[in-house]
Amino acid sequence: MGIYVVIAVLIILTCVLLTLIVLVQSSKGGGLASNFSSSNQFMGVRKTADFLEKSTWTLAIVLLVLSLFSIFVIPRGSSAKAGDPDLEEKYQELPDTQPAEGFTPPPGEETQEEPAQQE
Image (cartoon, rainbow, N blue to C red; front, top):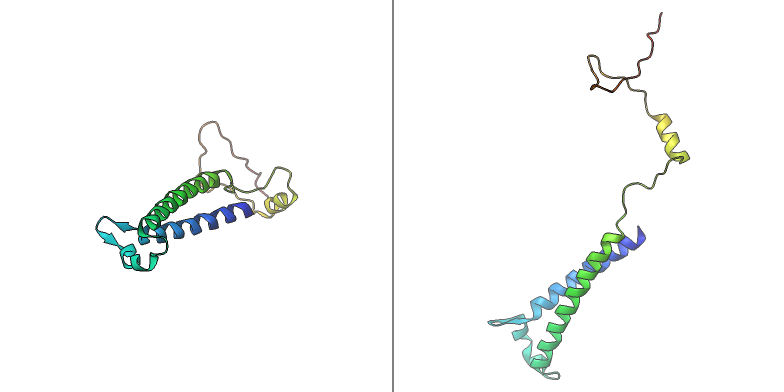
């Protein structure tokens, strides 16, 4: 279960980074990146756009791979196995239940009825 938690945290982190990078990119009509274009003069506007696009594709692929990998590490059901002493103790603690009065089992099934106790 520990690896599943690590994968889940990595997926959330990737989603947050992908969201931020997509919001920073400029669309054809402008966007948040247009406000920062003057501060990115050391790399140039074109190189910044290339970096953001490559980052978007990289994070999208990482998200896809992590999502597919998480399928294989999902904890499935309980880990109780036949012959497990803890499971047997819990089973012994269950109350004995009797079928409700007027209950008729489906054809082919029989209920175990205890003989009536005489007082």
